[in-house]
Image (cartoon, rainbow, N blue to C red; front, top):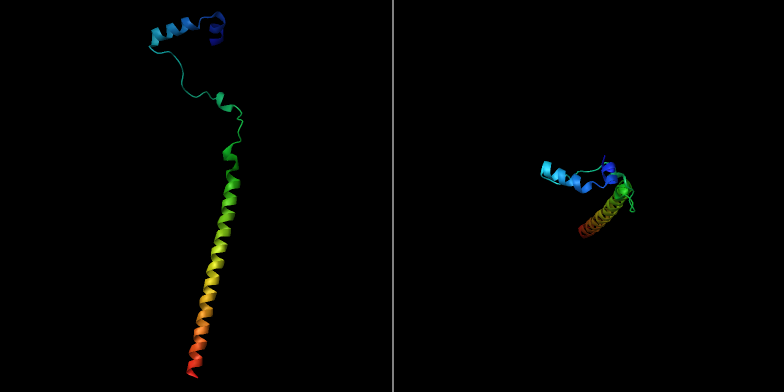
Length: 94
């Protein structure tokens, strides 16, 4: 119907009648489901989310492994220090 109105050049008259009858311009401000299917020039940022989560999990695993290695070294240093103190204690007792 809007195509017929446009072909006949009656848009202005239609708008006047709509304002007269309803009190507003009749513009619809809702979402048009057909317009939401347009292709974008940009890639969808949500498409990479699973890959980013896997990468984050891998980084998290690496960071945890590094922390564990540092903690292990600290424990080994403490044990070596305790062993040396025990040797010193023994040598004093002999």
